[in-house]
Image (cartoon, rainbow over all chains, first blue to last red; front, side, top):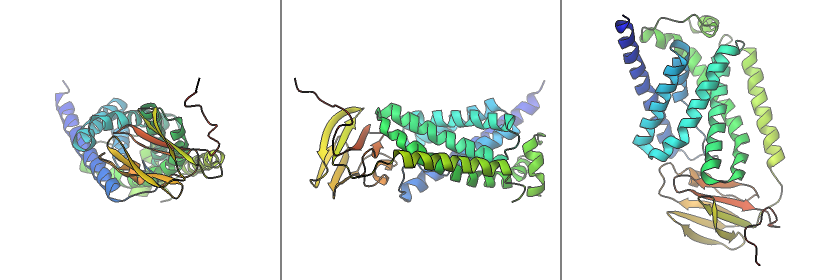
Amino acid sequence: MRSNVSSRRVATLGALLAISLVLSIVESMLGAMVPLPIPGVKLGLANIVSMFILVYFSLPSALVIAVLRTLLAALLTGGLSMFLFSAPGAILSILLMWAALRFVPPLSLVGVSMVGAVVHNLAQVCVAVLMTGEANLFYYAFVLTAVGAVSGSITGIVAAAAFSRAAGALRIKERATHILQSNQGGVR
Amino acid sequence: MKNIVKKADIILFILFIAAAAAGIVLMSGAGSGSVAVVRVDGVVTRQVDLSVDQTFRVGDVQLQVHDGAIAFIASDCPNKECIHAGWLKTPGSSAACLPNRVSVTVEGAGGDQEVDTVAE
């Protein structure tokens, strides 16, 4: 009955998965090349795609694509322990970004992206503590909160500037959410 | 730009930064540590005196002590996050190599933070 629509949807989501995978691999390559004073600092480029799917598709789609992305990225770069390390952060950040999109209308994509980045970083600290049994690693939670606020606003600004054009390129009909309406003027 | 960033975003940003700053200020104890504890899988495997310069291996990672600080200097892990963590000096600071499950924590000079072994 809706086969036409859903095959298109699958194809688009597949393309988005590929884009997010490239972004996360490029990011991990950059991370290996440029030494940073604080471990775990990332821009979170792949999070832009998660947000895009949350806005134009649905929460389940965003979760599935993010889990597949972390799995594939782990297989291509670090191995399965990388997956266990990054998947909880990806899932939690998508859940909270969804909640922010839905229940906190005053936030724009920039604020939503900040929430996602901070939650992602905090979840990774928790996983690190669980894996090493080292409670002192919680110290990084504060550093990574600040880092998440900065990196999240950067990726959020990119997202806000790029979303409606990307949706046009992928021929996705815009969902009339408050976020997109409020960003319309800035994009055009 | 005006349409992209809203007031609530700026407030949220300030909140995050303030929380982070408060946490960092509260957690950073003054003074330099003297003992580093090396754990594998959360189990203490080695206590290192940071006043003695040395280099040693734990599994697949190599650590170095120099000028009262300790750092990961070599590891076979893919991202080298542990090496990027750099030199650890202040008590409470730590770094971990998750793929190898090795972590290092600098503890205070008094060594009264926790009891690792008790002689009976």
